[in-house]
Length: 179
Image (cartoon, rainbow, N blue to C red; front, side):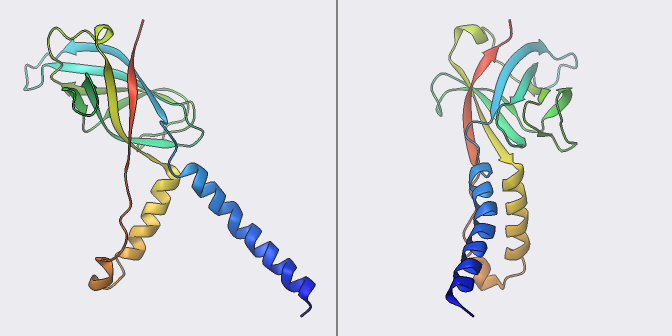
């Protein structure tokens, strides 16, 4: 085989591997993909342990689909500020844009999420420095993670312990107040 053909095949191989690698690099961990807007804090009617229902609008501002896994609303300075409410199991209603059944928000999508919490009395959202600390996963990260775990679970136990761990992406966003 001539050198020209070898170089052409090598260039084609690098190009075909480089395109998906570049896509993964740009879409794996989008920076601050979500915005949060407080819609309302209402007292619960069933007098359970949690005193309030906190409603927030979540907006995907990134160019890739993102799934919100968990969120904590904190007052004061991060990460040591007091926890105002946590969103463990996020109950959401679709507002606009494309949203999957598992809660994946596509670019520009909005959901209204509700959480039971213990919002402190006297804390008015517009008077304090309030941030949302949240865990999100891009759709690319979800696919890579599923592939990673399918491979790792098939490894022998001694190799499994040495496999590198995937990191989770925690982001912060200021809590916007609805007018």
